[in-house]
Image (tube, rainbow, N blue to C red; front, side):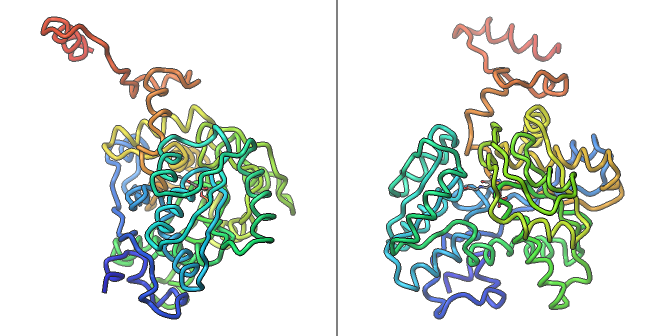
Length: 378
Ligand code: F0G
């Protein structure tokens, strides 16, 4: 079956979603690699640090795992149109899966606030791309009104079938580690569906007896978009939305839809919530890049957060840690180039060893050799 090639649908016994499996819309998502980070582990004094790289999915982000399930439902139920508000990755994934299924897609994105790679994907896959003069939270608000009044299937992560697909990386992680559950799984937090979905995945595996405990799931937010972090540190009952601002545009979200689920997962698993500022995100992203792996800025908050959890003692150096990398480095090349050209506001010493500004040289051997010798001497 084609769906056996999908890292999501091979767990279909745990995905009670479709009436007929043949209706699955798949692009061979899932089956993503677990990479080690040898230099970073050494730097942090950790023996066991792996990354589950969800950026290695067909459209370059973890959203594919949830889109294959939710879009299959839309197709099976006969919808002609699907829609989402997005910071760019959900829209890229939705556009691709809609195209495969022959459905029309409309995406709402905040104008000027998503990475170029993601914007181009939505157009490449043929979606109706609407750039709204607002932020992500404003996009969600307007779209909610529009789908209420029209026969359009909503594919934001409030859609429960999204979470079903997005729980499958939890199963893959356990399988790849021969069912030796890690002590910690660390995820970025934006709209807060991903942490929720992974919590669901691990919890179901425990209920089914595949694993005997659930890892501590910690959520890391950008300091400029940190409503869950504020809720967590102030021990408040209610989450207070914030006005979000960060160059990690994927998680530039001030009013996260799934905050209660994510909060429950953190509490139930004994995980923690942290935040990372713009400097910390940039350095962490450069470190992951320098391991030959790379990721987008929003994914790098996991490493930035891990450093803080180690400092505060919530993660111990002897423990087994998995970072969830959510998006591919090519999603946001502008950010990477700005970092290396020193155009981000990364005024910290830790950034300097990772900077590789591109050289512009005269096209002759001596000028190249001078540059090479300077680099070798340095
Ligand atoms: N990392 C990346 C690369 C993302 O694109 C997102 C969310 C997150 C982390 C956060 O995940 O929202 O489940 O907490 N992107 C959404 C989008 C909002 O529209 O693409 P979350």
